Length: 198
Image (tube, rainbow, N blue to C red):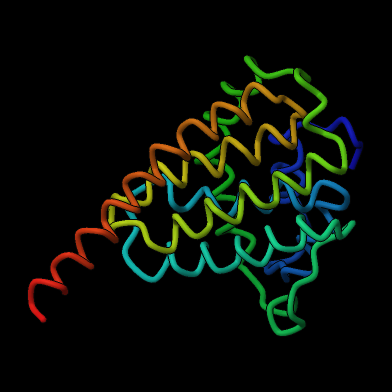
């Protein structure tokens, strides 16, 4: 996969892999040096729609693992062996990619390399910290619809990193701040309710 490949091209390459099922290891091999950024997009994607528990929890935990590795400057993601050997039906991947493709292509028409200072190793480590905060926001988001702002934010940040577009990353950060406020409000409401009971 070319280092200049766009998000839609990476996802199409993923959906066109041979075989009835793809392991997570196979997916990592396709993503190559873009693995971290595309993983961020893929983990945000399910949360852009109303999803029941535990999907936001699982995505948030995996995103936390990815974010910590970005913070420590790992060149490629490390995932547990059990997870790497888990497989996904290729038809499910094709279906997910087909649904996401129109939105990604619209965004790609507006996206181009901008504010590329965000693409430096030091800035990437800082982005890892930001993604970690977003992951925690996803973990504590209100169920069903409360995770949508965080899901959109995570997707935009990941897309901006793949496309090397700092403007898209900043847009994701703004939405993420809104989503984080909603998550904190939800946690505060629960804690206040518990305090009134006890």
